[in-house]
Image (cartoon, rainbow, N blue to C red; front, side):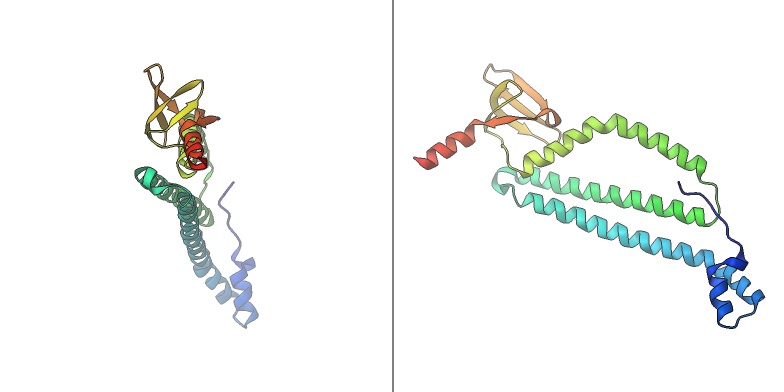
Length: 207
C-alpha cells in the first residue's frame, strides 16, 4: 500500500550529499526541504512515462505478431478489430501505470492515500467481477481469430451444434445449425471445436 511519508530534512539524502561537499547544515537542510520532493516527484513521473511507453509498444507488438498467423483474406475486418483491441489494452495499461505513478507522487507529498486506495480497490474489484465473463469472451475471440481456427462460411461442430458460421466477432460466434436454428455462442464458452471445412480442404489437397 502506498502511504504518505515525511522525512526529516536533517537526515535527507540530498542534505547529506551537499553537506559532504562542504555546505553548512542550515544550507544543506534548506536545499533538502526545497528540492528533494520535487526532484523525487519528477523522477517518478519520468519512470512512469518510460514504463507506459515501453508497455504500450510491447503490447502492440505482441498483438501484431498474433495477427501474422491469421489469413488476411479471411479475417481482414476481424484483424482490424483485434488491432483496435490491442490498442485499447495498451491505453488501459498506460492509464493504470499513470494512476500508480500519480498515487506514488502524492504519497511523496505526504498525503493520506488510504481512503482513495480503499475506494479504488472496491470499485476495481466490483468492475473486475462484473466484467470477467466479457473479458474472457474477448480474449477467446482474439485467439480464435489470430489462430485462424475457422472463418465465415466454414462448417464447424461446437458445443453439440454443427452448422455453418455466419458471423464472427470478438465476443461471439453465430452459427446456422443443420436444423436451421441460428445459434449465438459466446467465444469464452468454446473449449473444443471441429472444423469440417478444414477436413474437406485437407482431403481435397491430398487427392
